[in-house]
Length: 370
Image 1 (cartoon, rainbow, N blue to C red):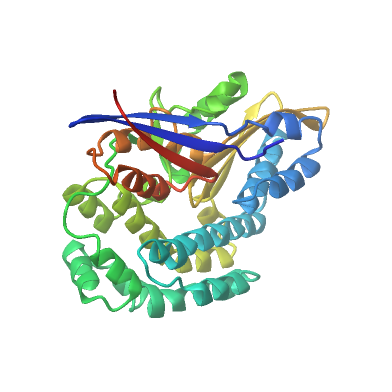
Image 2: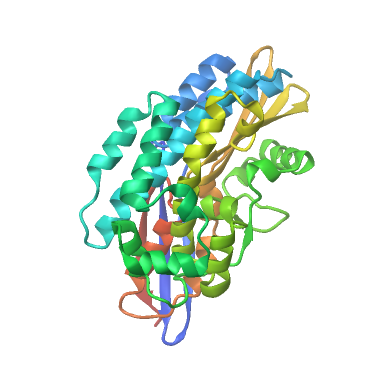
């Protein structure tokens, strides 16, 4: 059994006309098959093992959803510990993209040493926050995170043109034109802004209509989730989007902005501030032994919905970020539909798809209309 599947993207050129886009996913919806009949403890343990990415987030979501189904909610210390584990995982994913993947794609050497330092410090949230803060100051930003975060768009342009770090030089290399693959689909609300009624409606649709998990909708329309959705109101990112559009480059900036904020967020969680944790992990009791949990991951909002019967899982559904972002009519579809034809269409399409960070392998095929 293939637990991951893949995403195939087909582009068809029509001369100077818009490109035709088709997105096909073979990602299996296995939550019900794998978790039904298990106790909450067994289900949470398995959820953390079977997913190759975001394993901590999957386990936390399962724990929180099963607790909510029983009407049980954790104390502040437990909430903070869970949120810290989720943030450590999220931060490492963001750092992986910014320190390794992006430089390598642009022909620059990846910074494996910095990524290793982060991974080694992840055994302790306070130590991780200190390590990340130092790496931001010395490697990624070249100045304290608080100073960099205070920059407006003109200040950001000055920073990237000065090129004091590899990250700054990479942003300088993006030029001054419009973003690649602009999408204007709705943004899924960050977890902290999700209303209880909206959460319950998402859970209802997931539990009653399993196909919803493969192609989720927000108010009957596709939506985008991820760092860009969470950071969309940040002034620098908002100014970038107003000038260049909401595309692949905006998503890179959103990742860097969110990573720069994480040391302070982790420090707040280390003080066992349960309220701070609600931004990253939340749960709702749905009645009838059902519960929903949401966890923010590097790729976006992860939702777990469960119904228990006699202390064991009777129904289980997972709505993963990839299903939002790679919806057949969602943000990737709209972004790719706006690309101009050309010999480098496949390469540009891959860059746009990578900016949405699928959690499985994907392929791009380009054909010409006859």
